[in-house]
Length: 220
Image (cartoon, rainbow, N blue to C red; front, side, top):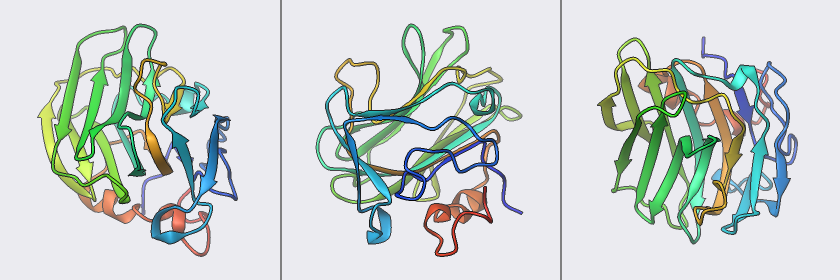
C-alpha cells in the first residue's frame, strides 16, 4: 500500500488550491496566479506564477503539515523565466525548509533546524528546467539522518544531517519566498507532502497521483 500524504495539493481546476488529503488542511490563499495546462498536457492542472513577489500561494500552518522528523516533498515544476523559490516553509528569521531553482539547470533544497539552528543545502546542476516539466523533490530520514534530493524519481544527491528536528511548523509558501527577489517564474503542479522518507520505489509510484483518470481516491 502506498503511503498517505499529510498534504496533497493537486493545484488543478477540481481542487483549485484546496487540500485533497484525508487531513482536511486549510486551502492555499492564491494571489496573482492562474490555472494553466500542466504535466502531460492536461488542461487546468497547474498554476502559473509570474515571478513577482505577490504571485504566490500561501498554505496556512497546520499541525498535520508539520513533518518535523522524517519528511518527503514532491512537486512538478516547469520554469519559464526567473529561478526562485518553488516551495518553502516560512521561517521568522530566514528561509526555512524548502525547494528552490537556482538557474535553468539547478535545483537546491534547504534544511533548517527548528529554532533557527544550522542550515544545510543539497543541490544538483544537471537538470533541464527551462520550458520542460520536471518531477522533483526532497526527503529526510530521521532514522538514518540522510537527506535526499530527487529528480525524476532518482536520488541524485544525498548528505547526512544527523538526527535533527526540522523547521516545518510555519505557513508554506508556493512560488515565492519572503519578498526578497526569490520568486519563481513558471508553472507548479501536484504538491505532495509526507511525514516519512519515501523510498525510490514509492517516489516513482506516486509520480502521477494527481493525474489519474479516475481521480485521487486511491491516494488521499
